[in-house]
Image (cartoon, rainbow, N blue to C red; front, side):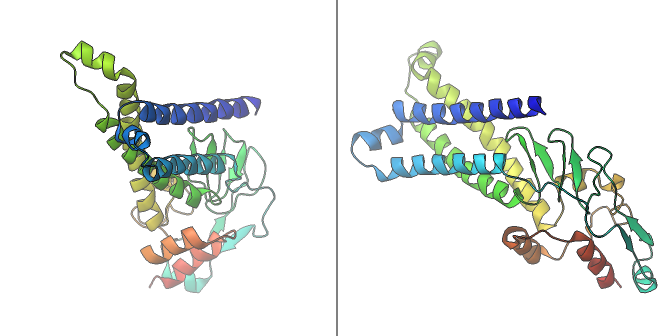
Length: 267
């Protein structure tokens, strides 16, 4: 447990130092941002710093908040399917047993999973993100998406600023001496832009289908998904309803009820 806390602190410190170091490089080199600051055109520099600050606040919020830990046993122990539901969903089992976690010995609600790094079961578990040092689950997943959006905006703007600051040189060696720190910042921004863009697109797609990363990757091994077609989710209620419930639901969701509602809707 101490190792996990220490690793999380190191990762957060590294993220903070890297973010402000790259921001400082963009201000000190001959970028558009630097020129605007020099000539008193402050709205754009202030807006950029504000976006960076917002991305940092969201990063720490997602990193430090409870992702949806399961702290006690739920009320529902076994989910049964009646004859009517069995006729509508013939491939579904008559009884859906909720697992008892072998690590924390708590009963796992549907869509929950135990994270060995966090040493907790997490509701609507998506994945454990090493960069935030925390799980992404039911409570912090919407904020994680918002963080990715703001971070991508900062990175794309930073990409443009870094590109605008490169100074010409007579040779490759001279160019590198003139632009070494800016080039390093540009390389970091480029790598993170690609990673964040891929993460954002994949998460928005999965959210629109009401599927978690864990469910998508381990569909064939999850008891409540084994009897569903590989490309379908029993929790899918359409793109608009999926997005609305994902971003606008503040309470704990009883996924067991939605699971059986999906079964009733199948004819």
